[in-house]
Length: 380
Ligand SMILES: Cc1ncc(COP(=O)(O)O)c(C=O)c1O
Image 1: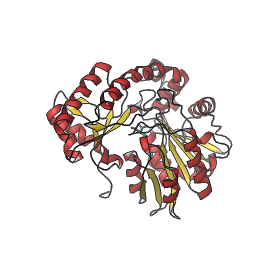
Image 2 (image 1 turned 120 degrees about the vertical axis):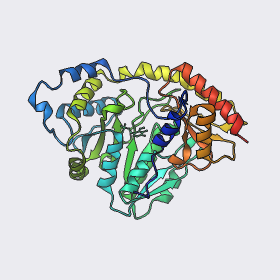
Image 3 (image 1 turned 90 degrees about the horizontal axis):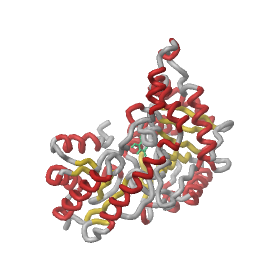
Image 4 (image 1 turned 45 degrees about the horizontal axis):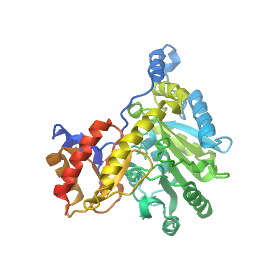
């Protein structure tokens, strides 16, 4: 465990709590909670004695059917007969299940940088080696760099789109190229799409598992945490090749036995409401996003912010000599605005992630104002 990086959110959270009045552009949350239908389902939950017993390791059949149906309708992914849906206690658990299922200690996972820190931490915990690879302009995938990084020990290439922390949305052709490369080199393509609904400016989401013949080497991870304001309810899911089901079943049976039944009931109700629930929230976020990108994008003297079209994040490379952890701590303590240091995501130098999902437009505007003021003081 000493080899695993310390989770950054609690550190930034502590500095934030120690500095009352800080506006957090830190944690990756949305501002809204679950649909009313989920809360109603929870009120009805518990009347049947079976509600209190263990359920199937992979989740309740009705929830699995609803997920399969959603994947077919929205993502073009036909799970059966070559794949299986496994409901997990969130997307993080889905990734850990995947890592443990496909790799032996010493195996390698290829991560285009920036990566999501909990993915990298899971790989280290599994006794495996994260292999970071550079990305191209705008944090887009560099397929040649990924190809060069694959060795005999590689078990998977991990992509996230829309991306945390960069906000980049990978185009269909790039995801197709990575997926084909994985097939050719005999490794899995693990694709995280928890931000699939959060795209702007005409960007479209693409699921690699929808590619003909991709299911046997593709693992898709998703979650209700962001789309349905479900973060504390802990419901995510994975689509795995049939051949991995026994392995994932062992892992999840040991770790979780079954996803929490009450949360599954709430999740089923949320999926029945569907995408229309979060569409207006995403439209609202699009306006907040303009404030963020327009303001930070116009500060060439202070920082560089590539335009991105997804999630609710962007990365700012600050023109400063201050080490990134000091930069983040001083932004909090001296300017009362919290951001996340990019080193947690494998980025070198003074890069910070700005998250605008959890705040209303006025708070984001105030927070960005403080950030600009702080950068003016701390930049070169
Ligand atoms: C890319 C990505 N995957 C997975 C997760 C984990 O989400 P969950 O709450 O479903 O575990 C997050 C959360 O921030 C994320 O950014």
